[in-house]
Length: 370
Image 1: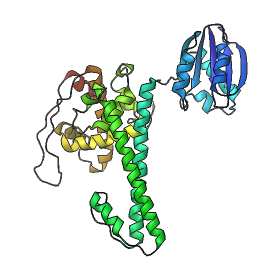
Image 2: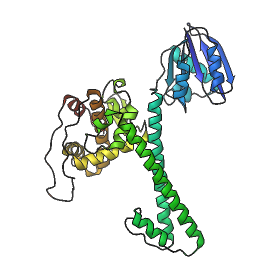
Image 3: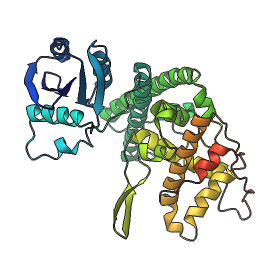
Image 4: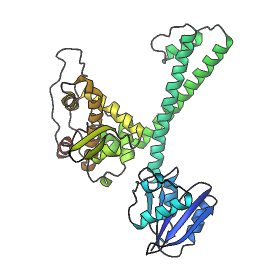
């Protein structure tokens, strides 16, 4: 068995090969793209294990290498956790390839999960919709700034058809402002059209996954949150515990524990930021719409109203733990939706309905992660 470490780049790569005793027998630079590097790997006649760091396009490269007839095992390392490389004082592609090969030989590679091509494409479309939403928000802010600088007060419902007609009829002092207005409105219409097109495609894809409909039974969880969680979890069985869902999405605090001291800091913010944001929004909707989620949130807040943001993040972590438990068990949520909670109205506090089901009770027993 040979152990191959790759330091992959688009125009050139470095390849290091160790034998069964861990001795280096080859360390060479491969000039050219990935196809040339695959040709060099094709010349290996013995069974081998291979490892490379995750980067842009790692899923496609993983599938190409895995088709090699001599490839016994292909691992993708987490670039942020391979401290032997990124914390080194001497960093070079040839040295990095050798270090990757040594980690592979020692079976100490921090691996990342490689989803299928369909799931990677699904995730990419979800992230592209998020980017378009950010672009649309930026365009709307520029439109508001344009009218404000011209001394025009915008009415309510500015983004409706009536508001669009109002913007078209406004007069500006210079022709340049008219050009900016027309171009910004065209850009906004283009963003709306693209987002509508992507949303329709995502809705069609969500119909193919029963897990999306399963998660939507949770009060406050909409189609975008459900599909994002399902796409990124992909295989619930790869999580040993439901509590790992909070770690995966970066909703647990940083920890620095030594002897009798245990310091908890900000959340780690690992994993996809877009899904983390959706989970926070879903948690807030759940607090407003479901007495069970609200009770969990208020239990964390307690007598400290300044901890409401911390409680909301902790509720989001608890909520994604519940989601993973549901995906593992296939059990639908039995929490009942109630009237939208308004803390300013006295007496508007619905009765508490506790969670039921073995999977949900197991998730409820996990720590809050404050």
